[in-house]
Image 1 (cartoon, rainbow, N blue to C red):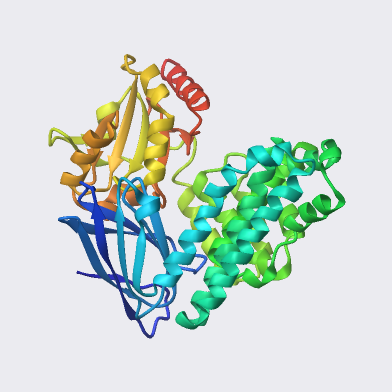
Image 2 (cartoon, one colour):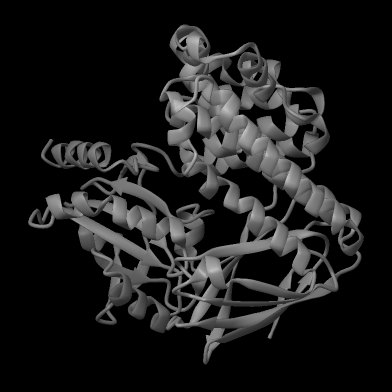
Length: 464
């Protein structure tokens, strides 16, 4: 099986990567692989890797170092790959952490990435001891720095077995993971915003604590080409601005991107700003107007990225609160064709997903109480749209107990017109559509209480 994963407009060469392995105690028919290119404007590509008798395998053509993130729906693993890698993966579905083994050329990148991923798991066990410490930031940041040092030693030892770009990207991932681990640990310890911690918890902060906290927002400009590091900076700054700047600024929606720009070092400014703009366009952020986004795009130093923002805004005009939702034709479990018009007069919560999508299942679990609340209300429909093949789709519904009215993309996967018309670039993607066939909410909340209120508000509009 040869899977072509070619990125970029000026590719002049490519090389093959082999991924294969065995999964014990797994009854699924495929693994889902998300391929993430380092280009800012490149979207992740989902590739299905079929399973047969517990074995899987596939050849990929790649143009450069890319990240492979692989999932069986419960367990996640992956690493950066480069041309010539041939990685063999073995694990037990029911005992993943103790059984996962990587072999073959390029295995070191997977082993290191897996070890870095464990930092988050380890820190969960350290929150209680940190809270009991006189200076919890010193305690927990010390643990994180120790883990970072060990990981960096492992990366340097393996440097001769990866090309320079892979080494750069792995180190970028390590720094991204450390940054997010430290920010998340502050929330876990104090349950407060960054500025509030510095003002209200001084008795728990040593001089070193304060210095280390300030360094968190002094980002490393050298990782401007690491998509994962840029993404981490974007996430950290989005939370910082929302919690610490927005409450104090009456003009926040107009000045948001300028506040962000002022906080960023030169090389990180354009990639982080582009990611923030792109995220707000895709999420349908109702607090930021298209005119503000267009104006902010002038802050980008890359003219091609400016044009991408303008093009995305043009496309997003089709998806917005109050706009008509695109019509579609999909097949349900009974083999019947279903359209948006089939649900006229009802509120429709539409959810795009696939069987091996961990975040999809997490959302299903989170909103179970919402589906339970409306299960006897014929004014509300929970419509799930799967991009799996028909057999995988039907098995997944039963296996995972997914509730709702089920349709799928008729073995056209991501190439079905509904994926483009609903601008589905990540999974899960959700919308609330009112009885008139208009978008009531773009990217509704994953919080069950908030989501319930959003649906109730949509139902109210049905009677107006």
